[in-house]
Image (cartoon, rainbow, N blue to C red; front, side, top):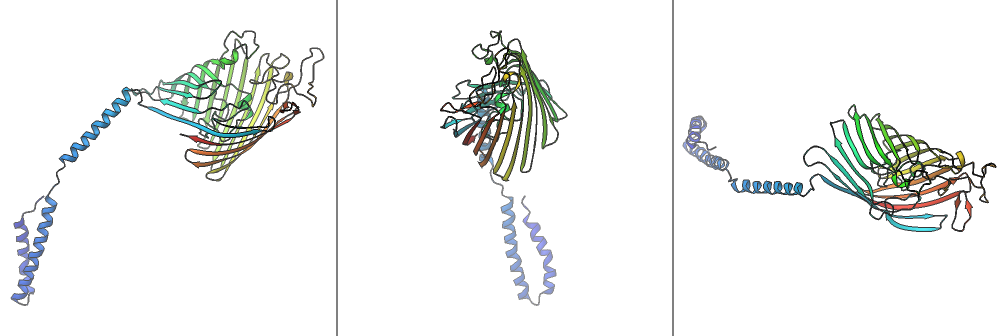
Length: 437
């Protein structure tokens, strides 16, 4: 806006009589007039500078071109199928040793179990491009010798509280998850898993079901019907009479999120038509401040899976405590116990007297087992206790350094060292750098 110069001059002229009244002479009055003229000139220059508006045409055109490029890039991304796609994963550079095998193993994997398998993990998740909220997850395990696909699942919303779930879905029993990156939905703080995860529960479900939430997420429930660990129905794995059929079953999990620190879950799985089994588990967790607590109780039975040919029955309990000495360093302790004494021993994983994990028929120091005089079959199975101590140091937002020492104690002489000697214990040590992205 440009102010009329005449108005400014008139205003200043109107003020001159008052100023002149105080002047002592004509010379003083002239000096004051010169000062006012100088001030008027400065003020006029400032008004003219304010009134001059820059030409924004070039800048506006440049912004429009950038917006058009972004829109075209977004369209190309959607057309190529990359819209809503997210990629994540984890890899572990690890070392572990075992006093039984006297071996020293270096490798890259996603944690180790008793099998020692080491693989990486990469996960693709996709949201619907049309806004319908249909999601899918594909999780791959490059380098795996047993299976390359860990999850291939769909999640289709019916409404805000209910979804259809389908595909290949990992087991959801217990408080531990598959990978060692301490992610709240994928990983666990230690390197190895507890005994219940390794020996007392299913691994995969392939089927169709639904998930539900209630009271703004305070309660959650999911279920599915399908095949449970169909690879275990192979006659090379199990001696079930109907080994040409797939085990059809149901699996479920319900969660109660009591508050932001505390949760309780109840889960189960049961199947028939080949392997006939049922498993039930209850787990819970509490995490607040520097402390973390997790616990799990599992019980199960499987028809004709014990060492003496009768039904295998097992129960197990696991508890974990974590404390952060400083925000980046967490101390961890975990204790597991598996009761496996019924009918010569047998669990969901270690059935029919396999005894590969310190379980199976309980042996004495000479390798003998207690036998039924009528059948000549084992009557008592070995129990297993695991104590794991470890540390978890968060190097940065994506990298952890873990250490772990684990003692496995059997109630019988059910471990065999590299020289063929029987022993009740096995001690393993591991350390790993885990990178997540």
